[in-house]
Structure formats: structure tokens, C-alpha cells
Image 1: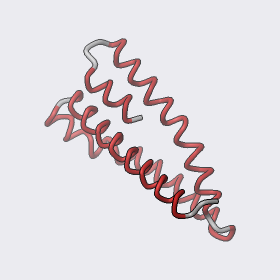
Image 2: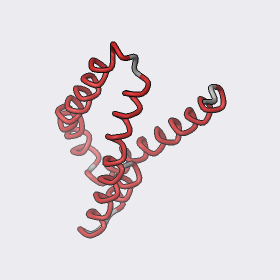
Image 3: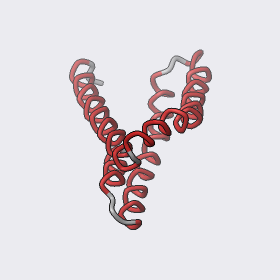
Length: 110
């Protein structure tokens, strides 16, 4: 998703924006089912429904709050810079999570 957002931030044409949106959409399409599976596997049976409901709530709350937070930022810095900044943060967070996953796998082999 982050790479798609960065591409949107650098886009200078409609076709480039569509390409970035496609990549971001593929990333979201991979993220959502995997988050659900990871949480389902990690959650104890008695908390699974509550935790999956929390995940759903977080996603929809994020969709609701996103324009409220991003509108002043995009008005101050422009849409391209906003997408570029958010995309860069997403890429950094993805790398951190991947690194933590490697550490976790080494510490707790299956």
C-alpha cells in the first residue's frame, strides 16, 4: 500500500495515479484477509469474536476519521506531498513489522 501511495505522490498524470491506486488496492487486498487470519490464529478462543470485532471497528473508525485528519494536512502541504508522506510512513512501518516478524520467528521457532 505504501509503495502505491508514494507513486501517487510522485504522479504527474492520471494514468500514473491509477497505477498507484492499483498497487495500493492490491496491498489492501492482501492486508485485510491476512490481518483477520493472523488475529484469528493468535487470539484465544474465548476472545476471538471480541478481537475480530475490534479489528473491524478499528478499520471503519479509521475510514471515518481519515478525512477529518487528512483534509487539513492536504490543504497545508498539497495532495501529492500528503500521499508521499503517508506512503513513506507506511513503507517504514512495513519494514519495521517485517523486521519484528523475523526476530519473532527466530525467538519462537514453530
